[in-house]
Image 1 (tube, rainbow, N blue to C red):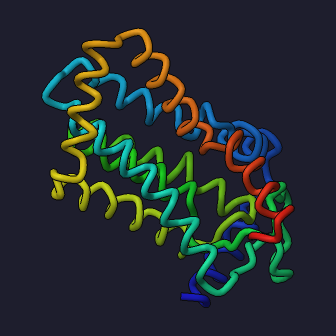
Image 2 (image 1 turned 90 degrees about the vertical axis):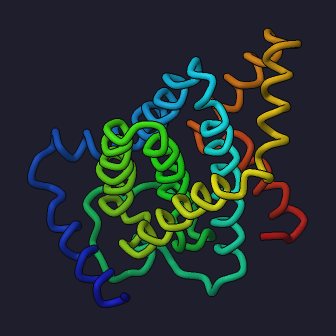
Image 3 (image 1 turned 90 degrees about the horizontal axis):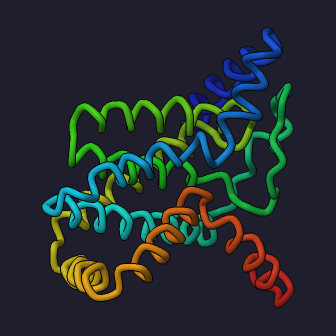
Length: 225
């Protein structure tokens, strides 16, 4: 896989620098939370009023949390893999500002995007195809373009994200209690329910960056990576 990663990364680096407009769109626009995950979150919101699909949405949100936990866990316990940007083997025209401490494998960005896309796929094949396309082109490709990840990091993250959705959707006992809680909360505490739901959607859209970065600094201060 390493040779394939190198070939793909080398090819992608040669795509940059030919068009200033395309470079800015990929590097500056497509990597913003609004363009990366907001459309996927809005796809879930689109189906929320269909009561029979709410358990699927709850399952997808739960899978998103599990996905982020698993990817971070793997990054911590697996041998450290430097991002392509810091490997010294490639010349990226538009490198992105990322911590060199975090391992490249797997991509938590791709994992979460494909978990949400898989959730959309379960509810609607047509919208699911668009969501998978979005996760591949808009979410994942810029990560290759800027040296954040190798191809195998993206594929590994996608497999983790989709697998979490499939496993939780078949393990109905795991999310039945959560779905019941959502149903009761939405009926008995509607305003608070909407406040929490919007907050969760916002944090997922931003990959919990406002929480993860301060938490990482606190852990680092105590010598925990």
